[in-house]
Image 1 (cartoon, helix red, strand yellow):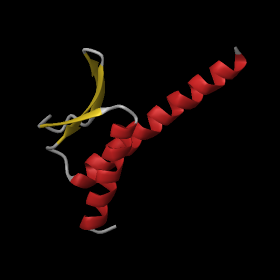
Image 2: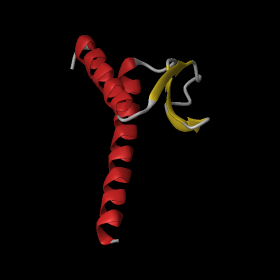
Image 3: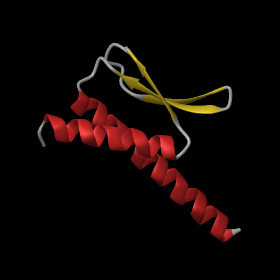
Image 4: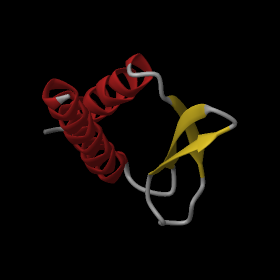
Amino acid sequence: MDGSDVLRSLDELRRELIGKGWAIREEWLNGRGCHMCEIRGQKVVFVDISLTPREQMAQLREICSALESCDHSIEKMARRA
């Protein structure tokens, strides 16, 4: 995957998160990584711009996977009820 592919994938991951209702904030987090939180009812993903685009992409993929796991768990629970 070359540089332009990484940037394209990173952009797609950001759009996916925005589509799921998450706001994206880019902050210098000094290598602490990307994080999710809720601020005044708004779901926010902080992207650590001190990381390389490839590192950001890997972390955003993990966040997307974690959100998908949560969604599936909620669906399973709802079906049981």
